[in-house]
Length: 109
Length: 119
Image (cartoon, rainbow over all chains, first blue to last red):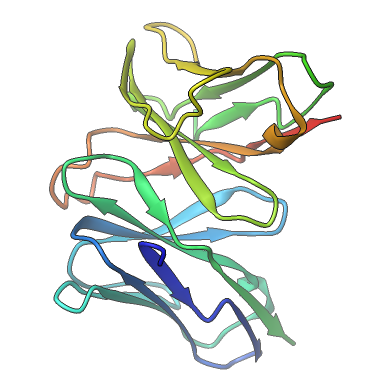
């Protein structure tokens, strides 16, 4: 079992739909990152969370430390949101990130 | 220096040659991380460096791979005697401070990646 599990692996939705991507992890962490990777492109850090909830534009990230679970939500989804969304966790006492395998999101106009 | 600069963006090498990938962190960032993304796989940590020091290289293959972050100049990931299995995207990221606590300044900035193809 991977330390970081994401679901779903693939998600296709119509423009305007509310999107939820889930991330579960099995280790104690000091922080969790949500990253966005466009096809053939670089990686953008969307959020870093240690507790609660963060919002940036149409993106919302939440984390429940007790349940070892985080969600990334996209409101009013748009085709430009199509990308791979990656959850990554940082364990206590070290700096390396452990990554989920990503969720490939496709938003259809 | 608005972000992490990686070069080359694309590199083609024949088996047995050497590959050198460079990463210039965000100005003011003293911590550099290298990650590898194999085709159709997720990202994997390779190495974490501070200026002139390797802090954690637990993700680096034991042979042929080395990394440095000199006092002056970019961080370099060096792969000697490349093999086809080294073909991947190599991403560099930088941060201003170690991952201590939950400071909003603890931001990780990624470069655009260097895509290595070994023929």
